[in-house]
Image 1: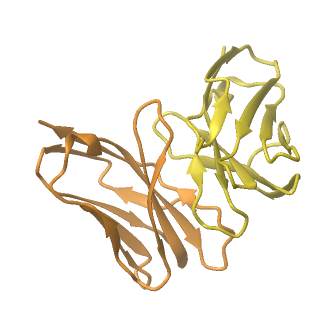
Image 2: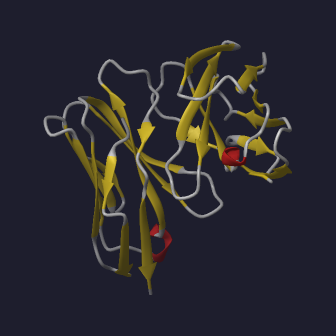
Image 3: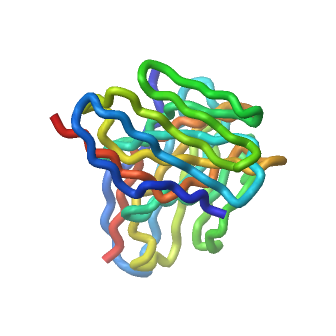
Length: 112
Length: 111
């Protein structure tokens, strides 16, 4: 049973560029959340997708956007990258209405 | 509001016990505990729901004091594999199934 998978593992971008990160949820899960984890910090909630719609959003600017596909996979897009966007981006999945979520290993984004 | 974890770091020898605390300023519906090793996904350990129950498996257990809005994670007879950063995630009452995570507690177990 495949867990949550994310790609790519690492990414290096320059300021002002745009980036897309991808996530496939654990088998049987239909709800995907994205988190940003800065060094030495806990994961910070960005947004959650269910039925291809953004259901909840954390305190992140509009530069952060997402999408969910009919197969429940999801993308996180970040526009106009800033140095402060450098972080580990984690995807977590669960069943809608369930309260246990499972994380992927993340994508390490470095903005130079 | 982010929960507060204490201590920030713990260093143990194999076989010793440790307690990690998590407190919130809000009334809680649930507390989630995860362990993350460097470069790996946070691994789900357990969830405690409103009701003050204690849960556990193997030598890791946790309690949830709803009135004090606190949870504690107990690691008994620690093993080398317990090393990592432990995060608590709290969900406020009336919540959304979106846990808010603390800054983590780094646990290092030496032989």
